[in-house]
Image (cartoon, rainbow, N blue to C red):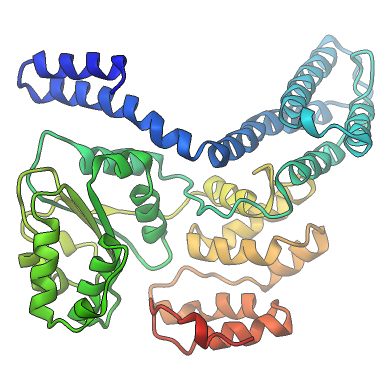
Length: 431
């Protein structure tokens, strides 16, 4: 343990037993030790941070350009000159960050992209007329592609849930309540319950705080045996044949003694009613070490029927701005919507009515074609997707399916043969 960690631990042990003080010092110790976790994923994090840093800078520049263009072209006032100065400052800030990000990759191609962007803005502090920002945006995308490759970041996008993430993190890691606690996330299908749960499950603080983490998918029809095996498989790297040959009761006992004395987090994804948890509750020991169980469900009243459960976190629909942010992050490297597509992009997000599932499906269709005509065509094809019956999502899925190339349609149909949340064996995949 490093010196700064020792100092924090000594402070923690010397403070009184009040919950607030111990919580404060515990968090400091955890933050220090989280450095080790962060270093192990430094490359991945650096890539994400550098790319994300461009987003607000490019947004500000495009906003400044929009404000500048809103002025009459014949306006020679001081206000117009001040707008020009702001555009130049934002542009210089963008170029500074791009240069620091890609200086090791400098070549003739990159230099040409820089020069083209500089010509777009103009020289000597004067912004050229009819500036749109299109070339600046496009070249930023090209520079990020050179730096990080052609694929947009594949991490699941969580937009608009910052408060929920922080609240749930606090409940999952709080030391004020060390008894086993049941925490639930609920909402209609497609709202992002699983995405939010995965965000929490893989959070560095969660990885550090819990000795054991496990994830299992429940769905509407399930077998108790499959759930127990799923949790055991998450906890044990190599589940042997002996385990698979055990009875349900033996599996439950094995799980109980595996979790006994450990601080564990177990996620039950897509649980439909309290019966599932009640059937398994006996296998989860409560040793007052801060263990947690996280449930995701479409039933917003689930917590009312689970003994000791905290009030359910009911997810909301996304706002129009949040919806556009999701599409931007899914489609564009910069995380900013192309200036020439922003108008039709807002129409598309409005038709998605704040439902993340519909937004993500639509983003997948828009991703590889940035023409205004294509986006208008997709916008015209979309209908209202906000429905309570999940079977009615077929229109949105059909839109996605119809725009797949023929060879991928076969794969789409193939995976549809398997039940929900079923692990598809690799040796059965088609080629």
